Image (tube, rainbow, N blue to C red):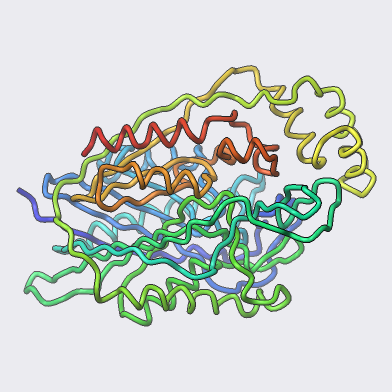
Length: 447
């Protein structure tokens, strides 16, 4: 039987030249002009008692594109002999990092350099492996996230940046309660002489990371995850990695005035760190054990809603193409029965998709007696809650933004009340519930 071992590596991936930023539906001309804090590729190598090694990797980007993931996985297999299903790649979903999908010579060079640095991080993590014990904790944060879907007193449902009919009526209630549960996994590590090595801390939490940005700002930043890592590592002399949860319908609470967020967003790292500090030394010890992985390709039905209004949608898109998204474009969209020009555009794009469905990779991992689920979407927090409730494991991590980017995964209630995410997603109503049920089924199989 092999020893249970954990290794850690963090490689700086901050570009040395200005590059386009992703997030906020931004265009190519949003190029960063300063670095607020550096961005990293983090790798954790975990070898179970059965000798299997799982690479848990995360980097400070908005999304993981499936093409990039496939390139990474191919190199990992060639150079490290680790199969694709044992290589996990996720993004922290910062809205103020490099947009890798642009067809640009400088971006392409950066993308190739990123793969080399990611491979380096994985090799260093494997080389750093040390005997480890597992500790876990959950803690509830206080007013650090909120559901961005809410009801106004005039009856309109809206979000903080999406305003059907231009309503400015007072907010009267949030439609669902946010999931403010933070999950922590601490690997207590030992050197060969049994002296203590640095702990490795995994932080699994769900919050939308755009405190540093905004569509008009041009700052490169790891945002909230980077701030949390810095505070926790300095507080506990540990090594920390942030794995984004299910945050497709969440924003952060506005404790910091919007005009100060670019300079003061680091305060969020301190606030999060306080909750981690409260439980860091009082976590529950878990048994070590095997690494077991299950990966399945899962069919997702294409969203065909509102195709009966395709001609109206084309009118809006034609205007948008010629004039951009100005006030008249927004007015035309509403007159045609759409919440926004983006809503109309999504109807046109979906109608052009010939297939009835497409397949996505779903992964579940067993680390000792810990369950872990991944989905390549912006998953809503309610889906994460339901998976954890139904999980056969005493402790379960839930993640979105993994191994590919396939749009929002709204819950059925989101489709019913109507929101930006449900309007523009390519995934049909009911997909979130099916994905959640499938992941629980897969957890049961590896339990």
